[in-house]
Image (cartoon, rainbow, N blue to C red; front, side, top):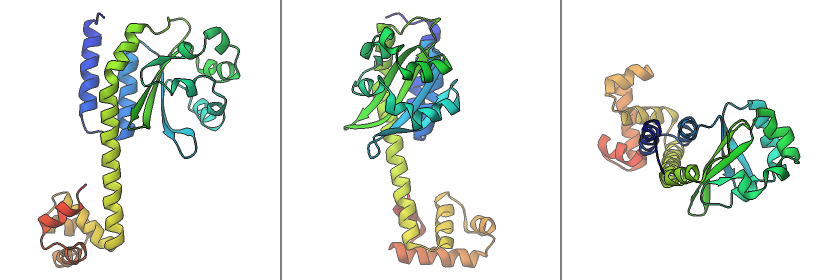
Length: 244
């Protein structure tokens, strides 16, 4: 597999992005732009599988009509002849690997959904982790270009482990943050929560007082109440207890 200077540079940017701490949505957005450049593609969408409702949600799109994507969420994903089969793969897979183009062109899905945005040649990559589908990348070209090659599929497969790791890390971080906020809301008053959050940002008593428009004495009272409710004796211990 030969990679030109531009592709090599893009691969470096992608791996750097996946190594950095980003939110889950940001990862899928940034990857869309970079992977489109890497593969010379024109369209991108990404979803997260919802096992409870057996549907795809949380869409991200590049160069696609948002209204058309909403139509996918509400209707076309339930009349999609290719994605359920592609989702079974744990490697990059082309639309034509699961359904010949001649057959796809005869479907409502192609004529009323894909064709509306000019999507013709497609490849999907799914991020599977411990039996859970964390997200996907759906990359498309129009019919003026060629189908994706075996080398391009291998490029995507090379990225998959880092993509999965990045999404799993972001998901853990979001879960930890959610648990922390829930812990705060259950035990502390709203003012005590605000004071504790600002303390966790490294702010001094005076800075917290200015930010909340209260006195420094009140700040200390809120912190002492938080110590007692959380079961710690000092500021450092409170931050350690509450930080994800």
